[in-house]
Length: 427
Ligand SMILES: Cc1ncc(COP(=O)(O)O)c(C=O)c1O
Image 1: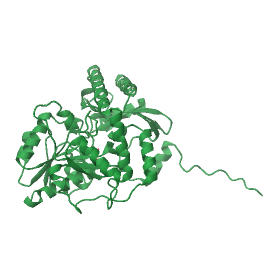
Image 2: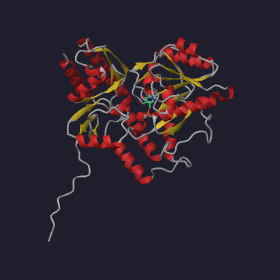
Image 3: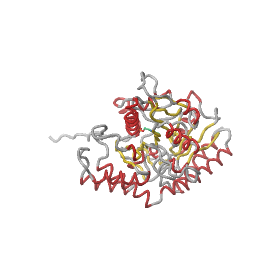
Image 4: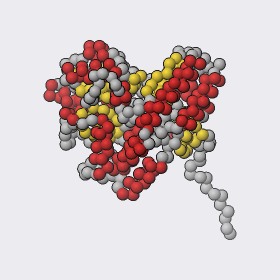
């Protein structure tokens, strides 16, 4: 007799409750996640598992430089995957050398090392600083208060925010923090053990605060005077987001005395491969061979797959003039957001940023936001989700816009209208 067997349940039930339950049971709960699960994207739009569409002004925290599902990325990924994915750094491959050449062309004379994340890129710079200062017993790296450099043990020690260190002591020694944009404080903090200074060109997680041109020039002079390495963390503010490849290049544009300015090391990650995990650091020429054979390594760093995709992302950015897009659309958004700040002064205290790295700082107690102990910034991000626009919180009172570099005027306008709608709906 033929049995009638009911069809088995589908392996993945595409609903938020089931997805959340699976995370709750199996994924380390180290993230404060929003109640959203996404299933697909296109350009600066994302669709959640219920089919609701969002304007994505967060781009995976400044990662998806070309937005979602860009055909050039898919094609490069497929073509390279069919040729060669990985061989290890025991050998040479064409894409890694070509990508390093591309990054050196965009920054200045030096060399690159490839890894897989921003924290790893900073870790490499710390090793560079220690190797640099080793023979004189110097090892210390001075960083800024409110900075963010990653979540590994050394990068939480480097980060100038107590919240990332809590419960993880003792800290890796050799890091101290001083106020950002304060040259006198940096000078006063130098010790005989200091080997390097590390800052973000624009602080991201700390609330979107650009370095002042005088600060950058002053740090360069200070480092030269005391024979220290000047290191920049360009993980979030880099990769054309400011309108130039690195934010220091944009900040110092047309500033007298800034011609030829270069730091000694730059950490990169996030946008480099448009969403594939990739990190890198660049070292200025005089120090480019400090980390010799055997000094540093990464199994996955600079695979032909990641490098081929990164080369394609770079080609598209240049072909489609996306640095220029970041500059002009960023300027337009800044003006429009400042107009909103003028209209809703009880909610928005200030709008800051450069290019497509923008931050809305909220007032201390914005009406209708921040009840039940929820930080107002987080509450506004929730309200924006409900309206259909994705933004990224920074700390308790800042909401960041870090959209794709190929954001269109149409998507920017739609995102802005949704933000205005939410601000209008507050009491
Ligand atoms: C400035 C900066 N540095 C480092 C990191 C750490 O990068 P990752 O999460 O790839 O390790 C981040 C991440 O947000 C960052 O914004």
